[in-house]
Length: 262
Image (tube, rainbow, N blue to C red; front, side, top):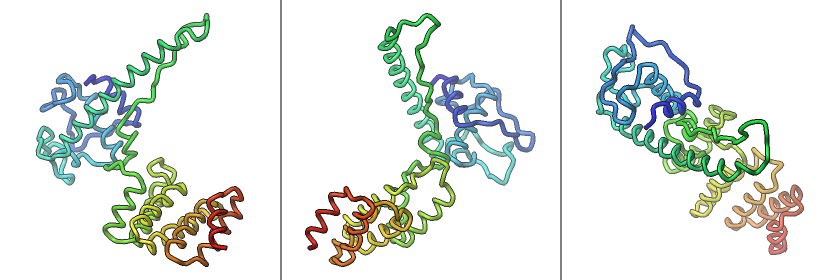
């Protein structure tokens, strides 16, 4: 993989230079490089590694053999003992392939539009500079899961209360950081998946929580009404279909369901 590309990738993630611990220095001649060029300099290696830790929100020990309580001079950075190091190499190759494909797309786009406008003030072709980085998918987390996926894991392990507690804790920690989608659709979709799995009572709790978060959305009340309808509680279903229709008079689903309930 082109080293300049890798350094550029990580610079986009907001890489900064950190102070090495205990007089440790980044090696001018690194050992056991399998993706990066053999002549990678110390500064280049530092930029790449810091890009990984920032992109995944992890420490060096995530991939490298060493005690976080000990200075880097005692670490074995060349070791392949930790499996995540090989996983990182796979990801590096994948990002390299993505950038090659993006370069092809950029080239085709430049060729297609090169003569769209007759301009006399220089080359106006625009390059795609939206480089893919670790942060593009990971957003500072080791596992690039969606909010729905995170909730599903917690639900399987601890039930609906654990899932809803996780939602609140994730929102407190990550809201506004571009990590998860905390809009109404995430919890709504999760609730529907639980409903489709036949866990009607749990789905009602999830969809009620979403309605509490987005009380001005006709869609969330429609979803809650649907869950109550499936549970057999037609009185509650009617109440929430009416609420949904009051918020969104064009909601055809609520209109049809209310006709069925008449």
